[in-house]
Structures are given as structure tokens and as C-alpha cells.
Image 1 (cartoon, rainbow, N blue to C red):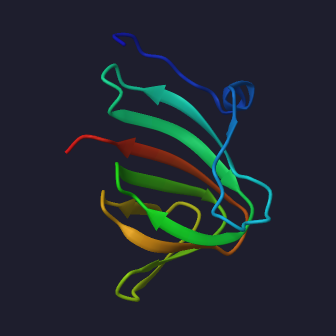
Image 2 (cartoon, rainbow, N blue to C red):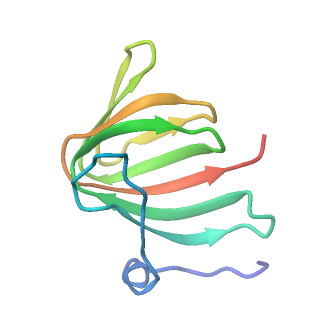
Image 3 (cartoon, rainbow, N blue to C red):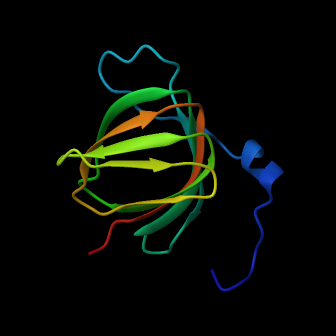
Length: 118
């Protein structure tokens, strides 16, 4: 952990991408993600995620997430009906306990950073 390292863009394609779970009844191809970094205590992780357009629930019960949208556009609707739209270059910040609906308007690619601590 004590040394600087660079994970280049092309390196991410060589890392093991895994299939992400789909909401029940979702017939779209599954999303994929790769974890690029995990802290020694396992509470902080960074990776990439990609998926075709879809709509489904967001329930961040176990972690805080900050996502940098690299490609595509998404709308997130809070439980109170507030709609938040994010696109390339935008940060989407979702605290632990967030309940919302995710609607990817186009294929999405994002950098995700999650923290499972308090």
C-alpha cells in the first residue's frame, strides 16, 4: 500500500470484469464491473461499472457511493420524487441508506468509489 502505482485505462480491460446482479425480471444483458483498488481494511473500494440502458431500484443499505459518470446519461429519482440527472463528467453522490430509482437513458460507464464505514 505504501507505493504509488498507476492503473492505466487499457489495464482495466485486462482485469477480471464480473457480472453484476440484475433486478428481478430484467431481460437486458447484465452489467459488468471491475474493482481496481481495495483499501487494506476493505472499507474503501474503487472500480469501473458499465451497463446498457435500464431502470431499476437503488438501495444503498451497506455503503456510501460517489460515482463519476464517464459515458452516458442517467436520471435518479429520490423517494420524495426529486429527479437528479447526471452525465459525462458529473459526480453522483449517494449516501448510505439512499432509496431511489435509477434510470439509465443510454449505455452507462462510471467510476465508482464506495465506503462501507460510518
